[in-house]
Length: 427
Image 1 (cartoon, rainbow, N blue to C red):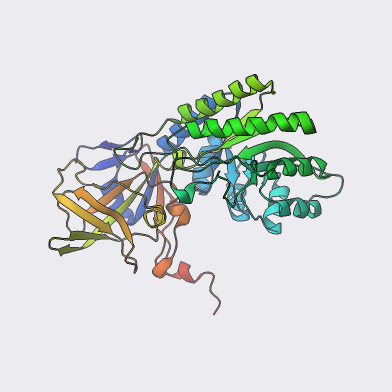
Image 2: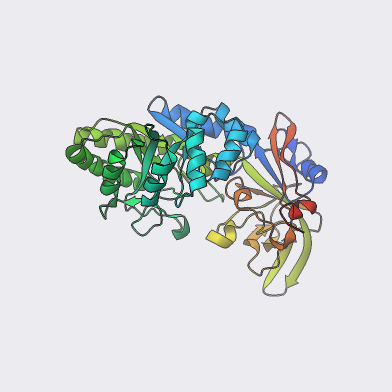
């Protein structure tokens, strides 16, 4: 699934999403421009909910991408929400996201983070010992707040090192292997102001090989046997994280949301049966696999530089300020001429951004048709972690964002102005 579900080539030969001509949108709204297909967001979310059924809860991971309208669509499909900061929580509350569906994760939470999570009634996922002490002061005497513990199962999935989080050497969670997880559970059970409702793990992101989730589940369930036998504790909830990968190129073939949920669920149910454990409620938290396929980025071609025998650079009006993933992870994308996506390629080009860094390259050596200044280039699978990590580097305003559906384009985030760059400055 490289393109949004509503994608087609229209009668004009242009790329179209949600009934909207992408070339026309670029001309009307300017570029860089990010668009989301509402039908794709809803379809991906509903796939998760249908696969889970009554067996557990699906949380959308806000760090992938969040805006008020986007979160309302996610909530409307029945998903809960995973936030990792007071800022993401504030955005969720301003979007009227149902508070009882919110979980607050993240390491090194501040007093302000935990206070806001407690006031909102969110389930707090404790990630380190310091949080036990902070919550003792935050939660009033005589009251208890629901918490989960993030555990590290010691599993390293087949993904980029920078987005692998479940191994022993990780800043996240209490390690099962070292014994820190068991100690944290005992501490939580003895804490006078905490109600330990579950255990959580997350092994990484952009994962295709689902066996890693089954391996992590086996390790978690072995721990549950120890906790049952030694502490008489069996969690009501068991979190398996998210991290399902998506197609960024035509050669990618990721599992579906249903395959992901069924793999994790089957591993949990079968593993509990072999160990005579109560089957807990399963919690998963997809982000990329919902937002990613729904989003596309549009850029306008500017200068073209030929270095004979070396490379042709095609510069566009965006780059690492709106999509730093190629720089961070070596992420690879496809690109298409929005006015004629089926045009035969004319040779390899390197699509460069306009930021003052030699590493500001969006795509290296991609086959493209003949391009000229003013052409619109469309990059699919740009819905996750691009805008969420966008910056104002080089004093560049961040792009406008649209939600498309039924032939209409709704502005979810207006394009920043130069004056917006000064909003927080003190003169």
